[in-house]
Image (cartoon, rainbow, N blue to C red; front, side, top):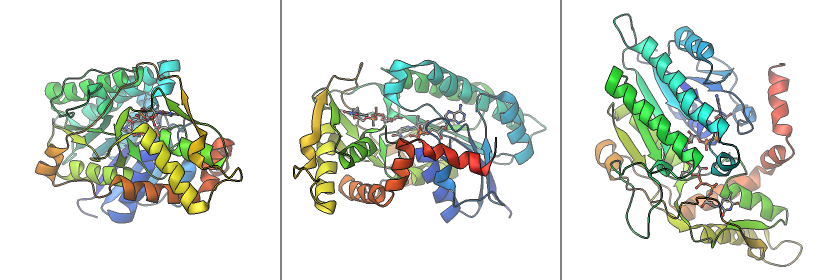
Length: 357
Ligand code: NAD
Ligand code: DAU
């Protein structure tokens, strides 16, 4: 097909990558997808089991830090677009074990940028409209007080090893635009929620614990604020940035849904009580809420000003938090086996069955 893109999606077996690949293959027939994923604890190939390798989709198990693997993919598949999700993504894990974050988030991004430079820049390049989209986070901007919003011009001030590693990769990506003219675009988005999120993150963790009658840990006083973005809205925004964005630009993506953590946790409990009734104890699920020691360096408030992407690319979120959280709880209720497979570790068996190691 003429004008078809061949997009390297890194980390396509994670939460956002999975939603992104499903969106592309459902809606955009002019995108061919190569999914490179190391299948760390966060990668679940089962998420994409409905997509066998074929003309428009191929899965490759591999590490973005592995120069030979990455360069072979660029050369064999004639990659013209990169959407780079692969990362260590959980703040708590970065506090207890930062090394993997430095490796994947910084060295891995560097390895991809170098491959893109090698294959896209210079006279011998035959790629017509290359685009390297680096997916990053609002956490690079640090923490807000009671007022104000993160803009694309807000100075970086990361607090955790995770956000420092992402800030570092953003700087590298920008430097490759300024120095080599690599066609880089960066997106910095707020907290995603929706289907396929690993149950270490707040919303699926609360779902899983409350379904099992376990305590619901809320860090500190529970009044930290996050700006919740429905994952499918985020994925649509990424498509717009690839199609219409400008090289060398960064776009903030947010949900316009600021919520205190305690309100999010209480709402998930109440929705579950309403949808499936009270648990055997007869107590509402919110009675399981337990305030625990705060996260080290816990950022107080995130809030995104997404004016730029609305003004220049016409994107804005479609799903508000009340709609999105209902859809999300419904998805987890309908996919309890998916959560159980992660909790008992059996989700890793699928890869072994499909591709005997
Ligand atoms: P995730 O942890 O659910 O998935 C990460 C994926 O990357 C997994 O499939 C994992 O196997 C893969 N991976 C990890 N290391 C790899 C390596 N070295 N080589 C190849 N693959 C590797 O993450 P997510 O929540 O889907 O986040 C995706 C991206 O979006 C990340 O870059 C993250 O920083 C960013 N982001 C996430 C959020 C959010 O709320 N989830 C918000 C803002 C930005
Ligand atoms: O803002 C974007 C970021 O959002 C992404 O860059 C990260 O990859 C993603 O993990 C997410 O980071 P957070 O740290 O905000 O997400 P998490 O789900 O871990 O926590 C959300 C809030 O809930 C945060 O204030 C910490 C709190 N929390 C979290 C957990 C896991 C609790 O109170 N209890 C918990 O058990």
